[in-house]
Image (cartoon, rainbow over all chains, first blue to last red; front, side):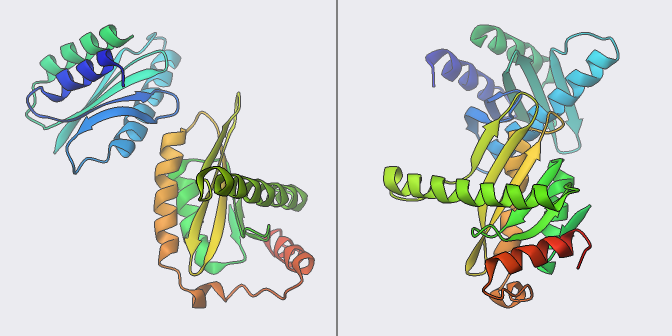
Length: 115
Length: 154
């Protein structure tokens, strides 16, 4: 893992409420590196997080909304954030009470630093 | 539509196809004998693919033994439009090979995830269940019979 990617993942994972932060290939949905709680299936998170993002990207493009930058999903027991640039994606899994705004900003910063 | 000559494969394969959103899928024995398929309309295609898959699996397994001491695991080939995923799963005391062909509607990560679920569901299959699809010992006859059953000519 490169130092920049390691730093970006470490920064994301250290944010309050974050349970997993991982880097993945956006098209294949394969995890490249991750920092995750032991009960988090990083491979599944990478697969489904990027699959959701790709679907959203296609839907937004079809609707004429242009390029998708970030996806956030709020569920009863947690939140998922995905941001991608080209074929590189960050996926973050967080507790429901995690600060969404802070996470979004951190995610975009991390993506900018790595991409 | 999922078609099978092995009843114990019906539900796991149909579930895999539905969840992983693959277009084509074939389950076969390492010998090349087809057990179940989804998405194919011609028996000749299935027969050719089973032969190729059996050969690829045999080659990559032996290559793995030579290079790594143990057979290689799942294999993935990415094409410009379609991709192929091939992996072995244990069923009873035997092995079932699963070949899946998919496109941009899904991803390798998703296919791998649901293959794990498919393999887990086969782990509960006993040799007694597998025996419901008997082999006569004549490979060509078995293959021909299974293809005929899959494509409604039996």
